[in-house]
Image (tube, rainbow, N blue to C red):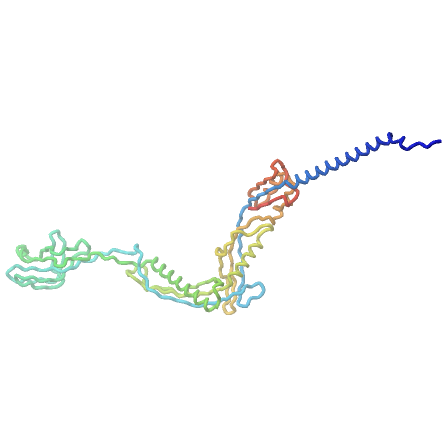
Amino acid sequence: MPLRSSHHSSPREAFPRAQSSNLYRNIGFTFLALTVLVVIVALWISSVHARVVVKVRHETTQLQTTVEVAKSPVQGQLQGRVVTGTFEKIQEFGVNDSSSTLPEDLPVAGTVKIVNNYSKAQALIKTTRLLTTDGRLYRIDKTVVVPSKQSVNVAAHSDKSGSAYVLAAGTRLVIPGLWAEMQKYIYAEAVSGFSGGTQISKIVTDMDVNSAQKTLQDAVLEQAKKTLRAEAGVGDDWNAVFTTKTVDQKSNAATGQKSDEFLASVKLDVTAVFYPSKDMDVLVQQKLKERLPDGRELTDYNPSLVTYHIEQTDVPNETARISISAQAGSRLTTNSPGLSKDAVAGLSLSDAKAKLESLDGVDSVDIQIRPSWIGKLPTMQNHIDLLVQ
């Protein structure tokens, strides 16, 4: 029997091979579609970014503490020097306050010429009256004899005090003590003019004395600062706290006394505690930072606003305790646990904003997401920009 050729089954085998080819092609297309989808999703995820701006409140942190300084410091002490001395100064001061001046009426004085046109000499005793036509009265200062047909000059003064008695040279005065008829021949004339009448007297006040003593205290303290710094042997990079005790202060003029000037003196005991300014500054900042909660930082710290006061000194052993008052601004930072990117990654815009605004110390939150239609922050933290202002 003849063998059948294998070619007789080929028409039946062709169709299954076509189905297998289509299956592989479909699988390939599916894989390609999935790959494209994955790429698209990856690109979409990588394109999402968020910018979170958190505005925080700047709050004030207060510090009240003490620090000990010593020439030979031990653990917990700051290196320093303690020196003391007694200083004094005396100085003359003028009374310059215009409110302390007092006008005072004084007699007016000048020189008169006694004219005698009578036929006989005329004697006039000391205090003889001279009268102006408007009734102002004056008296001569000594007894004189005026020869006939001659004149004699003599000093005279007003009977009362005040500038109203000032006379111009040439003013004529009668001598009311003479007979009326003789007054025509014997009279007086102002020669040099009469001046004076008012004197401005300066009165020493409490303000004058207090101001003088304050000036002296400032001058004494400045001198003490230089002297004690030289004695301590420290450089310009060391600061100091000073205490003063008034040993004596006095004035040679009493309040209410008339005087243009007076002497005042002040004696002070001055104690100085010197310390390295940089070391003290570091110590104060460190103590301020210790008062801050986690996630906050110091801002607006100004060393010049720190105040120091000497509480106690031991001059022989050169030790002292200084009280310190300081303050600085503080605010939240990205180191705060509540302000980390991890706290908001993957949250919706509203949830992220509410969570951040609930933190103590946060004023406002602004979140911008790109693309803008995405309502959710990225889960990838490196796609979140978190700024604290």
